[in-house]
Image 1 (cartoon, rainbow, N blue to C red):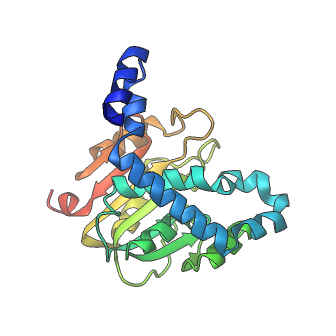
Image 2: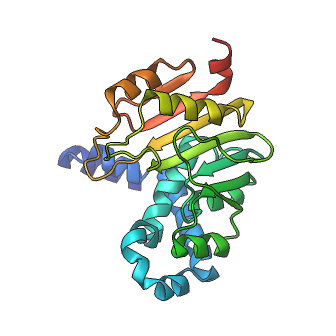
Length: 241
């Protein structure tokens, strides 16, 4: 009996069918190999040396220290966006952090650029270690993005914090309309815009105001996931409406 059939038999009798079959899927195995390869490269480049030197920054950057776990998220998102099945795309990652997402994309032949503040020494050193091109910029309401050069095929933002959620200054409809319109001005005609809102501690994304959710769902060519976590806008579909 094949390994898959054995696992399927066990799954049927334990109620673990979906998780076990997912672990045996070709996509999972492919992602796992890629994560291990990326992790090994980053570690050999000097990752652990930086971690030891910057131990005082651990609390602010803990998720970036759990390299394999964080890379699993990076690879999963990159694959979901079709970036591991293509090459040659120009990609901007806003709030790029340590740059792991962009590092992964460069391995697949994409032209990358990061955008972030430079307040965290740990992030700065990892970005330098991985040779990630980055523009220093703080995203603020009603403030345009800086000169970013040629337009992009994809603009991303993960675990968004610049919207001031959890404060009395959380972005409303006007702020998001301005920001999205500004981002579209940096996209190619067939480009895409992808936002992944910050799960914070509740993982229910309840800090996205109702009026903002309603506005995002009404944008032509866009889709906001049911739990309000992920927002994807196809510029080509947006432009023809």
